[in-house]
Length: 224
Picture 1 (cartoon, rainbow, N blue to C red):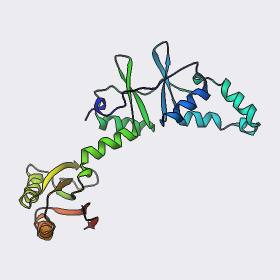
Picture 2 (tube, rainbow, N blue to C red):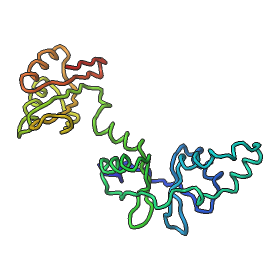
Picture 3 (cartoon, rainbow, N blue to C red):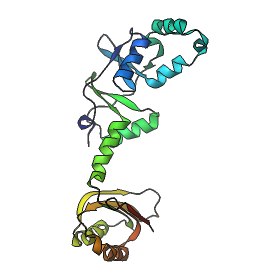
Picture 4 (cartoon, helix red, strand yellow):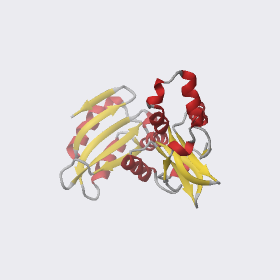
């Protein structure tokens, strides 16, 4: 899943010499929390709602309201923006981008190709991609297993699910917090008849360690 397929392609930007007041208005009117800052067509920074809040939280807040508004109108974007912005290319994967946001502790980045801003991607966009990737919208059943890390171990459990009429929506795996030689596998499926669910779980337990089951349609959760 690439950034180009999930980013916002309509990019709202500000100029370095725009006022902080104008930038605040843009953030609010467009319900966004980041603005790429441009100077002569070149990306030179980003302005986030965090930058605005940090600049607003000063001794100036003790001034009377008309004095405060006047002061804010005089502050330029270049005075409060974050310089040397973090960016990603459009052919970055969603996972790589999420790693960047987490490492830098930021909520979004401009997307830049050949030094041109072509979009922006935020945590919200990544959440949308994650929801699509996992297939949770199908409201089926998700099983979590711990299986041996060997060829065929995932197929063994998915074959059992298919035998009971299950259609796979997503299969994800992880090596986090498992003993050496094992992996966790998360399988989401739909089409399973609930009357055969008990037998299905018993068969799955024979082939793997069943960690939990979440039945979204019935809002039923079992942790083992």
